[in-house]
Image (cartoon, rainbow, N blue to C red; front, side, top):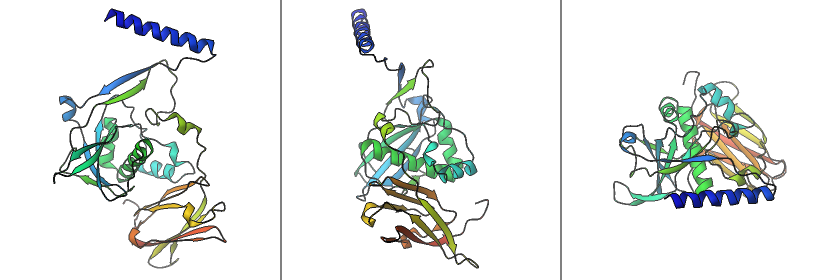
Length: 295
């Protein structure tokens, strides 16, 4: 064991010298913790979520906790809504660790893909008390899984299973925690982000307007106009409209709009048209329920 430790120390010294000769600094020290769902974790809060792949197949998300993961910044629903509707909604992030997908049998015996998502215990507790935070956390988790593992998920199509805490047993995850002497970034950042993402240009938020119709009387629908001057055709656009959210992306021209709606809409009846001349994407969204202050 001592010989192995000396060998490792020797290799580290050689690597550090090579970096020094090359004019580079050694990477910041970090500690890897193995978050394991032992007996103590069995009593902790867990939430099982059923989602869908774009193919229609069931996918399950096991939300569990680890003390090693930083707690998300504590914001109110009003503050969170302002952030999500700002020009830079990505400024608020929830620290999380996304486990690699595996297959487990559901209650019918069918093999389904499962992902384990670990967050700080208080982050998961907040999910139980805030509808907006719950929607945000589940959406962020699914988008993170898509980006990290190239999974194809239907964002927003989720069901929280009240009678099930997890599908299968959540697996151990290797979580990197920066040492105290290492300068760290903002608290609200993803654990172990892919370095390549830092090189990507920020998405452009297009100019947009959302209005209710009719202007007087009972609200029937909401109309959104998105100004996309650099888009040539509707084929460049990806649009996902939930019952209270619009997510539009144009990867070729780097447009992205992610905005929450003030009222619930009938998402199955939404229509969208892109005018090639005016470069306007027009969305007609019938209102299902008008939300008032306090809902």
